[in-house]
Image (cartoon, rainbow, N blue to C red; front, side):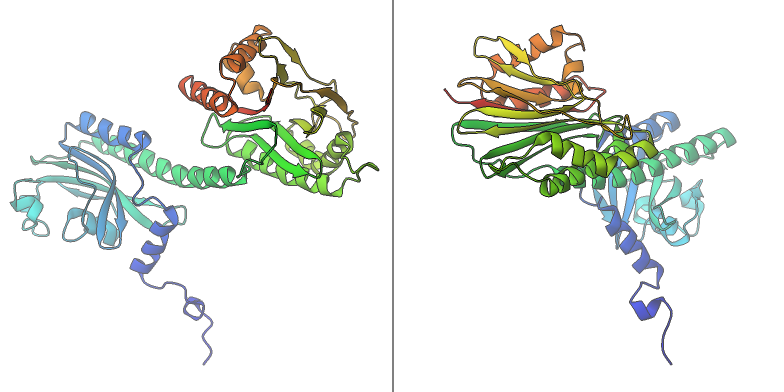
Amino acid sequence: MVQSGPEAWGLPQDRLSRRARAVAGLEIVGTPPEERFDRITRMARLMFRAPIATITIFDGDTAWFKSADGFDGRQAPLSPVFCSTTADTGERLIVENAAEDRRFRNLPGVTGKAHVRFYAGEPLVDTHGEVVGSFCIYDDRPRAFRPDELELFQELAAWAQAELIERTDLARAKEVQEALLPGRTPHMPGYELAATCTPSFNVGGDYYDWARTDYGTALGVADVMGKGSAAAIMGATVRAALRTASELTERDRDGRYRLDKVMSGLARIVTGDLLRTNIFVTVFLAHLDESTGRVDFADAGHGFCLVVAPDGGFRRISGTDLPLGIEPRGSWSQGSFTLAPSETMLIFSDGLFDLFGGADDSLRHIALLATEHPDPNDLVDTIAGLATAATSVDDVTAIVVRRQP
């Protein structure tokens, strides 16, 4: 007889195997403490005047504590403990006096110095409904939950579960987004290059990219309207489309890209998606000819590029064309300027502009920052630090190129 059920495909059949797969999918065991979880256990202890509160993950035969307020341990054997019952049944467990409960009165935690008497545990499940952990409160005195206390306990458990699921999704999205940023910085004789991208949330809609060409380096910064995962998804789409448009765009006779044509090609690929989702994207593309310092550029509604001189003087480089996603059809122009020796070029998102107040004077502050930090790596580290310290409400992205004297 030919098997046609899940076992024929090697899928887990027993509860422990399903749980192990679900916990592995969370990619959370062994991660460091996080305030988003610690605040829940801290609040639980305060609200219930209990000595211990935990967010526990069931990792095989181990109870691993993502957060534990009231003791310093990170893990314990899953059996025999209260959590093992929650894990096995997948149901809420309230033990009012463990010393009088035949199921638990002989547990080491009850008979030993921990002197556990009260336990409340609510199962935590993943997006598929598999039990992966529990939210727990322990007390060394017998007690009973009033109806309002039980409701509060359930609300805290629901909060813990929401954070658990959100943390998993956002952590994965963040890892993917970071992996999409360019890795190795290209070697540019006579120039220094660095960049940073600091999302206002775990993930964001800003991104930067660069690529070597036959006669220089292509650079790009894009800013998707909005923040968070929706903007990040569209940002990844624009990035892939830009690389495709760059490859498909015909070059001039001398082999140079026409950035206005690259922008038009990008628009043809993404405008339909942008219009359907009511999202627009600003994009600044540049190409540096390293032999001459000539920079060709195309600006789709971005407008944030500065060339800063060693004395702090600066000029703003921008175009007048619309962002992508505003009109079904559009056209974009190409301009050019020269990056002189000792000058620094910054291509950045409006998040950096807003960080300094969002007025015209912000450009002067950014230019001053570039003058005070002539090394591009130092400058982008400073920008990232400012964005983090100021808890920016917008993503902050910058590419910095300095031409050596």
